[in-house]
Length: 475
Image (cartoon, rainbow, N blue to C red):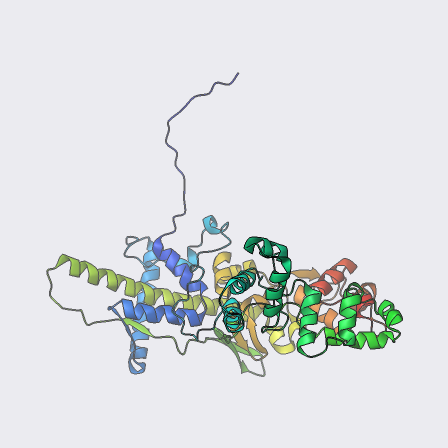
């Protein structure tokens, strides 16, 4: 029988310690250029040892910066300097120890990074303002505020109306009357108890409460969802084609009016990188960082030579100077890393820039990481939340990464995105009265030297939001 006991001993182990500076560097690598600009302008305000470079001085400072970065890289390779003094090559610091943390270090949720933007009231605030104008202060107002608080992100009522009535100890009729008032607010359809009611409220707002659309929603909603137009046509004594046209008009309504005012969506995408074709004959592309508005930084010389014996002042100046040098070097390393990653993507996906999405090749983060000699998590951070302006439009960097499928053609493998493009092209060219089955799409893809299973076609079709052949049929 085994004996239990306590033992004291020493054990050596290796651990990855994420220093505060490394955490900050990860943040700077991950954020988009527009947010980085705000961060740097905040640094300029808070650090008197940082100053913005005038255009006339930029070339001279760039030369000094290259020398400084090279010196920092040498320190890292040589293992010199203390952690507080050295500028670590953070791009190479993403050890295996970080691989399990998929939600990498980033800014706290809700932090706005002082981004200047117009205030936009929330959907609930907007509804509350309408309630104040429509309902006098009192019990009905409080019931209305409670109902607004019960609305989900889709704008529909997320709790039973009976619960509202019970909470305020009123009858269901009173709670329903307040709900009806809110249902008359903008956006049309808000505060509906289900999707059919939401659609009917929108029709009512247009004066179409007695229309064919309203009749179908009230009496044939399940058949409408399943596109069983023949069933509806028999009951209404009209043709399936007429039902299909009515269904199309219903499809223009919004089943989830939502509470968001679109503050995030209102922000225009600002590309972080730009790909430009510089040689038409040889299909050569160049990569540039879109950082024209980024402040160019340097260490201020204003405190050089100032005599002081105050230890606190000396410590303050030294800390601020060290941090200023670190920021400048880290931003330069970020710039080089982003360009390296994008150049590797361009090298792998050159045919995309010539032919479009159908020419996308399979590409993984690991492939790019191996090409540029960096860790996969570095590439992941670079591609997150970043966009690139190309001759074919603006794309998120993640767009260029896709799994591959075996192909019987000479190209060997094609990307999943390219396969989806082919499926879309085939379906776009089908006869709407006789839509193609997944099996037939498989056969047409085989004619393009692409062997793919029917279930894979079905999966990709569903991912693209394309209905099955039976549901796509038009009369």
